Length: 310
View 1 (cartoon, rainbow, N blue to C red):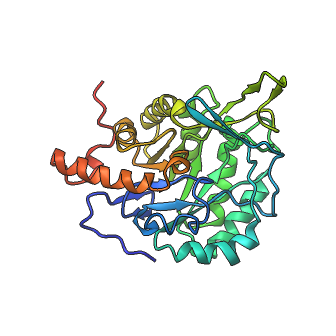
View 2: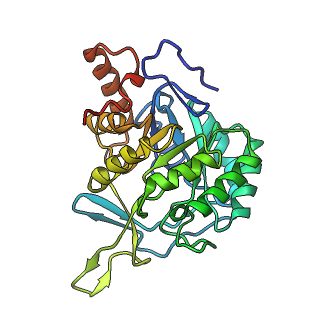
View 3: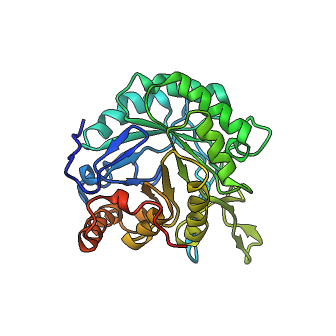
């Protein structure tokens, strides 16, 4: 396990998950690190969030599954993955050799799926668990489309996961709600050690020549620069509703974007769509943050969190 440099101005503690810096790669956007090792030093990253893991292998949704929009990316991958056993025996050893923190993202269609995944991963050396209750591209056994669209179902899933593991638990929330602060509070009360926000916004695009949707799933999740203003507003709203750390996600393409999230209340950030544009995006943001703190005479990234002047 990588040691944390206690003299590091970027060091941060996210609900017990101690990171050398607050920049992670978002789930589903960075593979299992082998694709990028010749391009960047993966050990520089604060953490790598895995693609969401399901109990059994999942083929995902029918293609086309990706469509680039004017200022973002629509995806309907549908949690394609090889399942829990393959992750533990094949993917995890490779990930741990990368020399950074590993956060396992888990997804399921019912509460029992999340319980089983959390229990199994508690016996491994992943460093934390991110509970994906907000993917817009899979159907759940829930009264609502997504578990994260209802405070009760959010609470049930997070409480069940917490009973299965002593590792830090991060609840990944959906922007497709009327009050994300309410959902964040439900996660906090259920025992979540942190919340990450936002997952993708539900969207679609249309091929007018064929009169058909661009995606095989018809709708998908919109990410990238187009959603950054939405994500910033939601991080700001949740910052005033919960005491647990918030991990900001949504259209972060540069150091300046990341700083905006810290000012709004994020304690860490995840880089997603930017990885497809530049695999070194997260590394560049880490260096940019370090330089920003130095130029401002700040001793620690914590001095930035929630300091938005309103």
